[in-house]
Length: 480
Ligand code: NDP
Image (cartoon, rainbow, N blue to C red):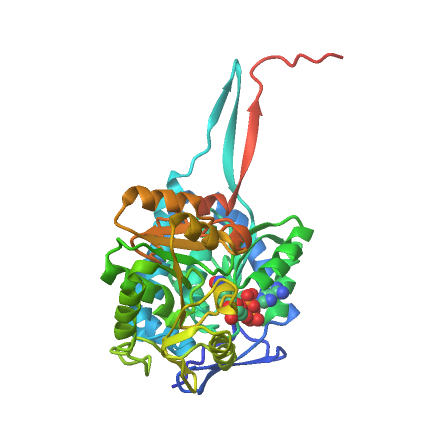
């Protein structure tokens, strides 16, 4: 199947091509077929994108928030109307099964557009009484924002970044991962059809060097990145040179803590969702599953039974529950962790094998804190089960990592649930569930997992800045 877009880039309201840019072959991971050929953005394409964003932004910011919101909500409706074809494209691009892309990827992007479109007219400043004088504050947009996306949720990421940015009156230049470049182009076209003025949302393709060039352009006021911690450090440092605003959504090694009194079926189901959805390629996954010793054997038995029933295969078939990994490089990386875990003495409970681009859902037990599997982000369908005795011990071990993206706890004891969550160093937490990320709830990490928040009311703060205005009501009392 071919999914060749009309051109590589979308700039100033239209498709744009510059075949001087290096070739990007887009591969359907399920078949290995090349489904599109694109070119990296040349300096001329980047300049056109940034110039059009800059030119369009101030008129957009001057519009009533309710008008901006209406356009975003129209785009959300169009995404829902085209839900099936968009989901098919996402599946071709990422290899994720259609049963996921139909309900998770674009639908959550549409939710973001609807939510921020509705929320932005409610954004107000404050008035501050100062005796006879007073001050007031305005929330102003930042200007031109750059979004840089990862390959795991390419269309959702494009929506999660553009929705709050555009709602607040900013313009955006978005660079998808070169591994999954197709969805963002669709979004750009939908925005134009929904009535978004040209130049406000541009998509440019390219590898890391293209992203790096965007981050340091003097026209750019803010950079929002979703990706790994090493990339985050580089992008954050580059953005700091121009004192730019940043949002960093980075990796994790999140704990999912299961106490003996937890509902067993729910805990097993959540642990599977936290490790196998999107073939494990999710930043907030609960990849360190701490199980209290008294239920360890029963937990592993149910987990193995349910995991072995996961249907791997052609992601375009509705019955398929897990597709291939996104790229051959990712398969190699994940299998390196699988083989390393065996070598380090972890006990393989099920899975562990690879066929081409497909890696079986894999569970390791008896994982210890010092094994690489417990320390590094694998980004594949590999669950590490660790065991623990006491609450104090598990909290301390959960926190002994540089990451701090997410955490979950399963227990029937509500006081304990809140106490444990209170002690965990993580930005996004769940009690008796895992990995639900509704747009209404802020999402993001602490420690090395990130800076800033996406979603929720909080996201608008990260796409705006406060202007304070002091109003003098009397004569100026100068000491000169
Ligand atoms: P990266 O973090 O390397 O890339 C994320 C995005 O940043 C991509 O669009 C990438 O471009 C771009 N980029 C890379 N370097 C720079 C730079 N110096 N300046 C500006 N932009 C840059 O993720 P990868 O896709 O390479 O995946 C590597 C690993 O990262 C995965 O195996 C996984 O462990 C982790 N990861 C974590 C994610 C998360 O959400 N936590 C998401 C995705 C990956 P391009 O890809 O086109 O080179």
